Length: 117
Image (cartoon, rainbow, N blue to C red; front, side, top):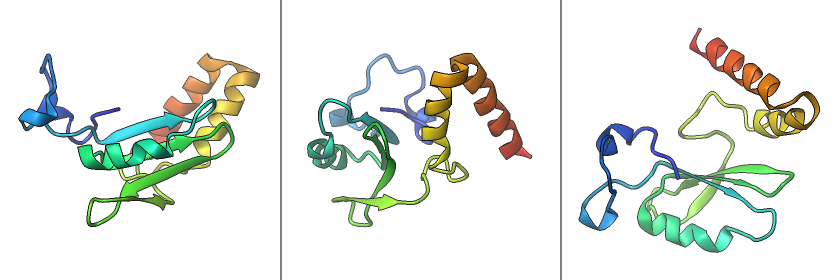
């Protein structure tokens, strides 16, 4: 799980305790190659994790908590990274096998710089 928007609230904390008022992570990423993660969604919702990315080895999906903060609904855009095209991530993962991780990281960095402009 990752802190993005809420990172300043937990920065420099040695331990995070949600039971003592610390905020939930903003993003969880689940890779479902050998086992499914859908059963974990209610747990993430109870914690207050706003967004989940779920990759099953072929398809990446973004999920966001609904307005009642009870269940996750599939989304076409990431809350944490609204400019990120969901199709780019599986492409980068595939390219990593062909051109190598370093070359793909350079592509990702280039893409990030282009988004700032």
